[in-house]
Amino acid sequence: MTVAGTETLRAGRRMRLREILSQHDTDGMLVTSLTNIRYLSGFSGSNAALYVSASDSADDVIATDSRYTIQVGAEAPDLPLILDRASVPGLVAGLVQHGVTRVHIEDTMSLETHDRVRTMMRELIPTHGIVEGQRIVKDEAEIASLERACAITAESMMRLFDELQAGWTEIRAARRLEQLFGELGADDRAFETIVGAGEHSAIPHHQPTFRPLAYGDFVVVDAGARVEGYHADMTRTVVVGGTPADWQTEIYDCVQRSQQAALDASVVGTEWAVIDGAARGLIADEGFGEFFGHGLGHGVGLDIHEAPMIGPRSVGRLAPSTAFTLEPGIYLSGRGGVRIEDTVVVEPGGARVLTAAHRGIRSVG
Image (cartoon, rainbow, N blue to C red; front, side, top):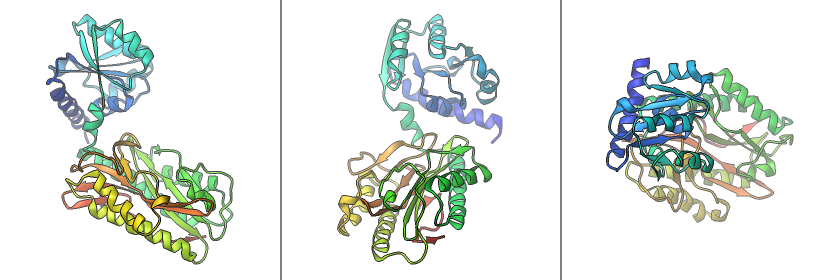
C-alpha cells in the first residue's frame, strides 16, 4: 500500500471513531493505549499519546518524544506533532491551550497518569473498549498482514516438524521455530513460544524447559509469527516416533472433530457462545469435558489476545471480517494433552483458515 493509501486508511479509522464521539458531549478522546495509537495513526513507538477530535479532523494531534522524531514523521506524517518526553501531559497541556476542556479517556490509563492529567483538564470521561470494539472487524490491509503472518507461521511449523528429533529439548525446538520465523520474513515472534513434551503437553501454557523429547511423547507446539504488527497464533500436536498409542489417537481425534465443529459453526451472525458450545459439547459428549477448561478462542490482530473472547459465557455475534482463533484441547494431567489451533477470518461463505497446514495426527523424529 502506498504512503498516501496508508494515511487515508488511518484517517478513515479516526473518522469512524469521531462519528462515535460526536454522539457524546465531549471535545474528543485522549488515546493512550499504544496498540490503539498504532491502529489509529500508524505510529509504533513506545511513548505516545493521541488526541482524536469529536468534531474536526484538523484538530487531531499526536505526541511523542525526540527519540521518535524521524519515526513518527514516517509512520504518521499526516498528524500534527507535539514533542514532549512526558507525552500524555504534554499533549493535554497543548489541548488546554486550544480550549479543549472535556475529553474521553481510556480506562486502561494508569492511575498515576490519570491523577496528573486530572489537574490540567476540567473533565475526564472514562470509556471502555471503544477503539478495541472498532478493531474487531478487520480491513483489507489488516487481513493481508494477518495472512502473511499466518503463512509464515504455518510454513515454519511444518519445517520444524521435518527437523524435530527425539533428544531435542523443548527449548531447542522453541528457539529453532523462532529462527525459522525470521528466516521466512517475520518481524518477530507474536508471543513466547510454547513447546510442551510428554506430561508437559497437558499444561496449556507450559514454558519450555530442557526436558528432552522422548519416543512416544505428545509434543504441543503453540506459536506465532508477527508481521507489520499483526500476530498469528497456531498450535499443532505431534507424536515423537512410531505409531501413536490408542489413547493418543482417541483424544487427538476428539479434539480434531471438535475444532471442525467450531469451524462449521463459524458463520456470520452466529452467537459466540454457540460456536464455543459446538466444540465444547462434542468433547463433553466423548467423556472429556472436564479436561477442556479454557476458552475456545480469542480475537487476533495488533494484540495477540484481543476482542472478542470466545467462551461459554461470551456475548455477541460473529461479524464479517473478524479474525480469531479456534483452539480446543484435552489435557490429561501427568500423561499428556492435545491442542489444535488455527487463526481464521470469517467471510460470507464461512471461516477461512489462515494457518493452513496439516491437522491430522503426525509422527516426527
